[in-house]
Length: 353
Image (cartoon, rainbow, N blue to C red; front, top):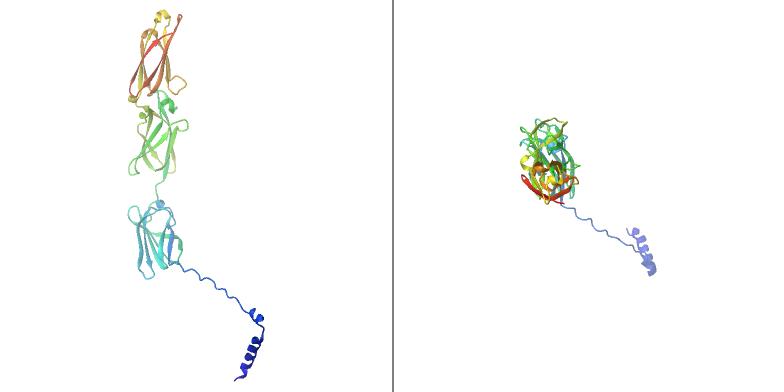
C-alpha cells in the first residue's frame, strides 16, 4: 500500500525545491493569552430584613436578631447572637466559597422570639446579596407602637408685677427656658428640653409624645456676672396628649422667683442747697439697666422725703439718676449700681449743679 504515499513525497520534493526566500514567508505567529486570575476562595453574604413586611425595627417591635449560618454539610460556621436591630440588614464577610443555609431569628423587647426566616445562598468569591429576606411573625405580632402627639405653648414673665405679662425676654432678664416633661404612669422617662429666649424664640413645640398624661414645667434662667440665676417658674402644668393631635396650651405666664430679684433704696441730699431754697417739690428718679436705651423705671418722689425704696428689679448693672428742678435752678446726680441677686442696692445721690 505504497501508492497513497507518492503524492506526499512529491509534495515534499516541491517544497524542498522552493527558494529559501519563499520559504521564509510561509511561517505563522502564535499569540498566547495570560491565564485568568484565580477565583477568590472567600466571599461575603449580605441581606436586608423585613418583619412580616415591616422594615423598621422599632415599629416591628424588634430589639435584636440572632443569625446562624451552616455550610452544605450542616455544620455551623458562624453564629451571631444579640445583634442590635439597626441599619436595615447585615453583611458577613470572609466566608469560604460554597453553599450556605442562613437562619435569622428576631427577638422583641421583652426577650421573646417575634419573627423567624431562612434562606439558601451560594458564595463564589464576591458578595452574595440575598436582597430582602422576609421573616414571618411567630405567634401574635407585637402590638403597634402607641400613637404620638405634641404640645405647644408660648411663654411670658410676670415682671415687674403680677399684673404684667412681659413677653420681651431681654426686659424680663431671661436667657434660657428649661422645659421639663414628666410622663405619668409607664409612659417613658422624664426629659428636659432647653430653648433660647429672644425675639425669635418665644415658645416651644414638643413633638413625639406618646399618648397619655404628662406634667410639664417651665423654668426661666438669666445671668448675673456670668452666673446663672433662676428667675421664673411656671409650676406644674398637667396635660393629656392624644395621638395624632397637637395640644395648644396658649400663653403660659411664669411667676417670679421673688428671692432672686432685688430692690433699690435711694437717698438724696443737696451739695449746696435745700428743696425749699431750690424751689423744688419733687426729685425725679430714673433706673436704667446697662444695655438698654430707655429707663426701666422712672418716678417723682417728694423732695423732702429724703429716701425711697423701689422694689423688684432683675439682677443686673444699673445707672440711677436723680434730678431736682425748681424755680431757682436744677440739681442732679448719677450713680452706677451693681445690683446682685437677692440684694438691696443702697444708692446715695448728692444733688449738685
